[in-house]
Image (cartoon, rainbow, N blue to C red):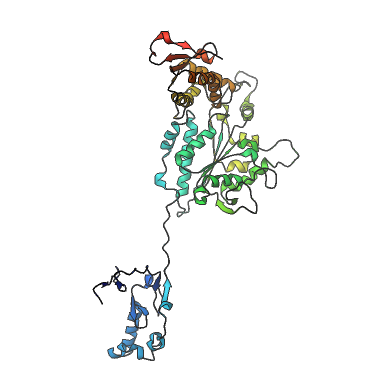
Length: 484
């Protein structure tokens, strides 16, 4: 062997074949030896003993062979001439002259890659941390944020837990009830963004029974799969928010088939509880040209929300059952002016509204959202991270103009929004109305430095107060923009 040749020894003590310098080293062999006698591979039997003709025998079988020979009275010379002994057929070397080297090799099994769990229990924020994060974006609704934080935390603990102790945690699907514009959809969107999980938001109004015009029930899972970039494993730990769930209530006094009401509720039962659902990949409807995949909804969190109009009347009827004649009788109009009457809702009320008991049983967490007061609307205007006022201040800052609001102006905006009875959505409509003239006039004059919105301007009794650049403290330079 020349000086340029060298040999490598593995950690197990095996000597690798000689490698000549300048030659490419052969890739690692994907085969492993196995014992000629017991047929066990090297990873199980341990280091092999190689004898002539490329035969491998494990140490256990070799030791048993020696023990049997010693017990039979063989001498050491006989053992050394083992290949010439006709009676030892199991390792008769003379019969194995043409034994091919690779016929006694097994292909190595590739080690399974250790995949990180889809949900790491250590990375799930505690309920108080989830609520604190929601507080930065959502104003009010303290009870709803508390309920959702605990339910989501318990749900993902359920996903990360195992059932080795035969205790299986049930799903914590939610049903939220609240007037329009109170923040149902916004809460779910914010929650999904904070947890970094795929979210699918769909309307129940388009769902129909299979075979009828409209979306099949499985389409809600298709949207979640698309939100997860067609990653099935990630989609199976996502959140599905079904809005307008009150639109699939049972139709009353009808003799026709209820294909968009009770039938949809019955079809959703398997989704809510957990089932294997075949959904199209990259499309919203099934057809022969679209590939299909199976998605398990067992670990998908379902949140259903709706305004449930006229549910207050059902609650009033239940609460007024005790009304009678007498001094202690309850007045029938006692609850007429109660804005938060929905907070007194019970499962029986929702069932009478038209939701079937089987459907409600799979939504164990029922909670309501409060109606927004004027004070809450003012807080919504300025407190969240992406508050509406901050958005308009940023827009005017691009024109190098500072936008300010007087305190009375904020309450005037909230009062106008309250009259529209569409919740927080009305705030944007009110602001757009009076900001139109400002956004149109300001780019005309580069000398404008500050614009202050007053209550008089909101009530159309005056104009906004502006100050020119460098003269913010001078009352003589304050003038009003024309009101168009």
